[in-house]
Length: 174
Image 1 (cartoon, rainbow, N blue to C red):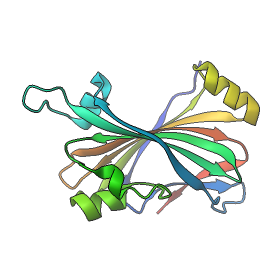
Image 2: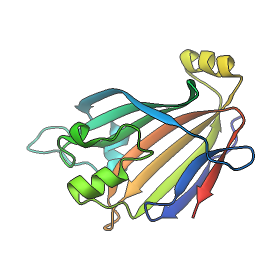
Image 3: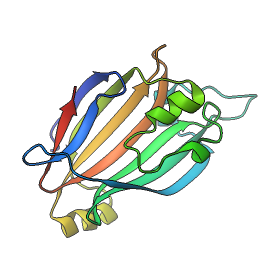
């Protein structure tokens, strides 16, 4: 069976998880946007982001898929999901190499992240493609889910990450 999940909240946008080596030194990471698409929100996305239909149309989301690498080696697959109507033209403002999009939300849309809720769970791959990646890296997998909230406690984004852990640790910054 899969170990249970760990959940915690971090207050303020500057706090969060950082990838570090076994000595606690932050790892230099290259982040690349590899795909983006706008689509009808899934039932789970509607629930998490508290989306409401607009003019009898189903809610739509923007999904940004990113890869985190160090020295060319894949460390993380990430999908950031936001309400398409709340963040129009987000792709034009995205800084692909930024750890999060929180600064863009604040600067371009006046949506400041006040709190994040993390759920972290060790995982066995269910997807054969991920199983191949895990075997290639000799890595264990860690699934992270982050929900970012604004000052009114409304969800801003849903971020889902799959980390391939080989010789790195997570550090919570204060």
